[in-house]
Length: 142
Image 1 (cartoon, rainbow, N blue to C red):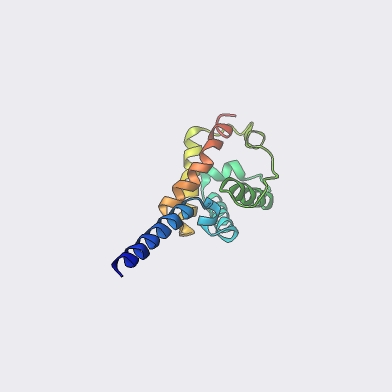
Image 2: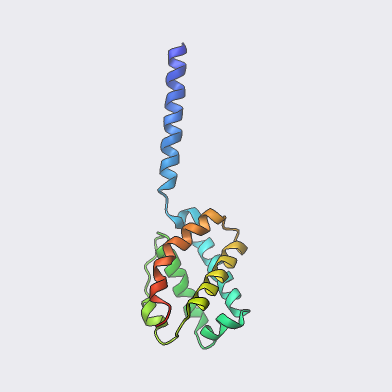
């Protein structure tokens, strides 16, 4: 009886450990909650930009509908979602904008605010920012 109880406990612990490891392999997109949360973050980000005089200057002549569509695709794609990004490269989009490092960092702050308003937990925000970070070099000083 004791031996079978130990086996059950061992199996339960191994199952719990395997399930925990498997959940760590889920995409950031899935951890966010999928498309609805991606759209909420992007919509919040657009609102942040709209009311920010520094960032609004970069977007004042933009087609916001297209920006929203491509930003949703890009965030979905970068976080491991089922989307294909069909927009221009970050270099194509940002060349000539002369985005400074300070303004880029300010944009990141607005994006964090957008995630906060979408109730994305901070550890998950860090994962989102980590998959977006490589685009930095394709955005500033072009």
